[in-house]
Image 1 (cartoon, rainbow, N blue to C red):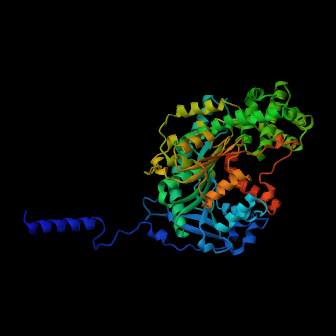
Image 2: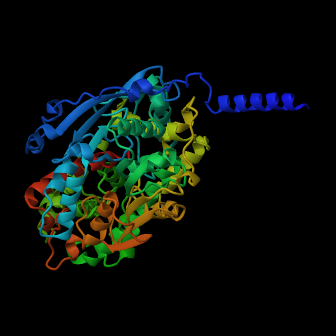
Image 3: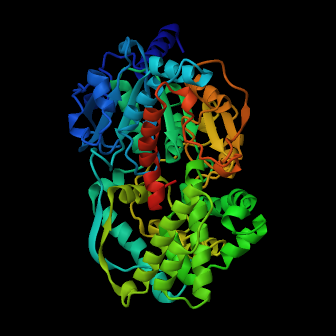
Length: 594
């Protein structure tokens, strides 16, 4: 080849290379998200949401409390199509808010509305006391962040998903005794109706974790933050992992509290929660009850407590499960948990004596007394509810009284997210039925809910992929986990943690809490909030001891869920905490959350 030809060939190759790298004069392709990224967020007052603010927490914040509606693509794979609305609540820092990052919250579910988390977290932090190290840390958090809560797509004041139909659904037996073909058909019919009625709503295809993670990233951009700062609880940890795997370069400090096992499929999470219910009873609740057999008379050791619970029969079990008292093991819920177990065992004893329901109701209220006032009051309430359930279920035709199919937005979003996030690989209905009843056979407190698997019937899932564990190798998240967490068992959290070399964990032994926010000990809270504040990394794993349980204190006394010394106004902090927990616990009490 001549020199002139060689120069010409090299010039052509260089021009082609520059064109491929964007070096040509042609304009770059338009960003498909530009119209969303360039929108102006119009912040307004939050008066439309403040009717349920009797304590005036919001009013005390004045103009620092702001609300807005943000437009996001319904489908990120086709952003030029329809838009949906995300409702956002923000509390701005008291000083120089424009210089401070935003801390985003997600309370879990999926399907729980997180809008008010900004309000309650910010107010709790602002009540920190200068008298303790933990209280000072709360005040440091208050001074360092703007706080953001939002209604995830599908719930709250965001674009809603409701799954409604005209099919008739019937009451079901929810225990291990519900294996009769007619009852199994009712369970599996409900699963099929769920898929049919959710998927006929066009919004349902776009309710999934990938979309919510991208919604958070768009909100982060609109608020002007370089990185996402985040606190996620329960399913919120799944969302946090997904975000960190999707946008590793944009993931800032993240606390993931009460962790789902991101290393496994979301379809295993419902199985894990039922396994967690049995494990927590066997290893945490039964020994606790046995330590206080003088009060409860449930059994002098854990083996006897379990045996006594196993003696509860079909009728009482079907009345026990809807009470949902055993699906969580936070310290402040254990009084209700133990009282409900006692109500079930005493009811079974009286049924074995051939007592009528009217007689049982009278005996439980007037003849059985627990020498501990909170326990006795909780027992009376649990006994009343249990007998009421027994009476309803004994009504002729109770199991043949249908209702039109309806799922709340919370339940609709739960099923849509689970079925959309990952394909269900095992679509054998018999497998899920057998698995559900096998789990229910472990203990009378465990429902057969896994037998109702709507994802068997889910069709046309969108083509996106859950981030791999490899994508999370550099994720500097802090995982917060209790040993006896029911909905998200510690075994799954530890399995995920072992595969994330850059992660840190605070592990709380002898604790059953699900959501350890404002835990109130230096070991837990200083590590958690130092991480969010960007302090030097904690050790790979910090092991803390759980707080003493109420009946283990001498003399017995109820420990409040927040530690008074860490707050300048303990009574207001207590009320705020209760409001915050009501929102966090609502889905699990309803039985449809991780």
